[in-house]
Image (cartoon, rainbow, N blue to C red; front, side, top):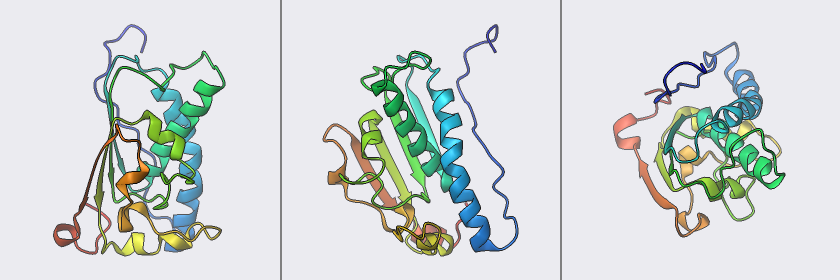
Length: 180
């Protein structure tokens, strides 16, 4: 809203209710999450570079966030002027991924979102090593078969040295449930 006050909180949501058979529904949402990342990138690309940003991505929200950051990296490298560049922005970016439904090697040196790590100042993972839904994550992307980041975690050494990283396994508190 051009004439309105600057927003302090934005909720980016999408229809996530289960539709039909669980595995088919999961695959459809997995595919859709990649496209939703483009919309989030557009939104993030309009934020003042001085403004700190915190993004909480739950389940496929982590995948959407990484897709968005990957788009922002690509846009910056292509010299696009329709969005604010995110590489080297002074405002801090803190990501919190809860039960992240994204492949566990996403930020590895050869992972698909390794460049997105350059846009983070802090990454906090809240995993659940007993999550029944994340246990079946390898079935969503048949070509990869990797476990979910929110299920198995990741090595902190994969992130740039200046990225603050913490990870917690909430299985003892959350149990086998995927919902909070």
